[in-house]
Image 1: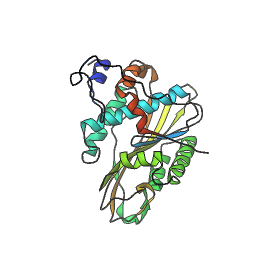
Image 2: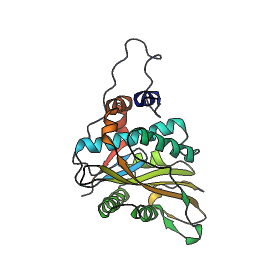
Image 3: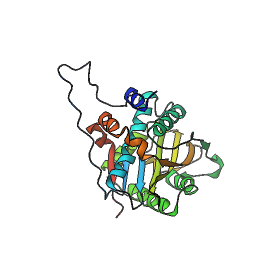
Image 4: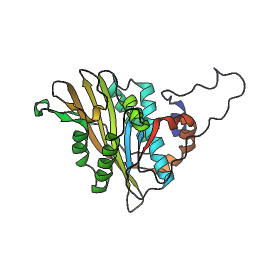
Length: 253
C-alpha cells in the first residue's frame, strides 16, 4: 500500500467528521499551530516530550505532530487503557510509517517486592539506560517542571486526562536530540499501569507495591524526516487545528 494511501485510511481519535455527513462544500481544515523554536518541552497528548538545544522550530513541529498523529491513530483503533498492548503495536506501526525507526515495545513488569516507588523516578531510571546525558538532563528538568504545576494548569490537565482513567494509565516520556550528522534521535520510555484506584498527579504519587502493577519499556528511535516530508502536509491536514488542544508547552526556566 502506498504511504499516502495508508495515511489517508487512518482515522484519528476525536477527529471531526467531514465529508458525507456534512452538507454543502467541504471546507479546508485550519492547520495546527506553528511550534516556536523556543519550545523546550511539552505535553503532547499522552506523551511528555523534551528537546535538547539545537532543533529548529519546524523540526520540533515534525516531532510533535508525527508523535501525536501516531497516538491518536492508535487510540482510534484500540482502547488506550483496556487494550494497551494492541495500542502500542498500532502506535509503533504508525510511527514507523511516518519515518521513525522503531521496534516492538518489550514491556517488563516492575518487581513488586521492591516496596513503595514513584513512577517519575522509575521512568527516569528506565530511560537513563538508553538516553544521552543531554537527553536525560532535559527529561529530568521537564518532569520536575511538570511536578510543580498546580492542578488545573494546562499541561498537567492535558497529561492527566490523556494518560489515566479510573484504574489504569498509559504514557510516554522522551527527549529528542539532533546529532552532528543532522539526524533526529529520540530516547523514549513507554509505560502503563493497572491500579486499585485513581490518583491525581499519579506520576508523583508514592505507590505501594500492592496498589499498582507497573510495566516499562524503552527504545531509541531515529526520525527519517525525508520520508516524513512526503506526507507532512497530509498529516497536518488530518490533524487540523484540533491538534493544538493536545499540546501544553512547559517552560524549563
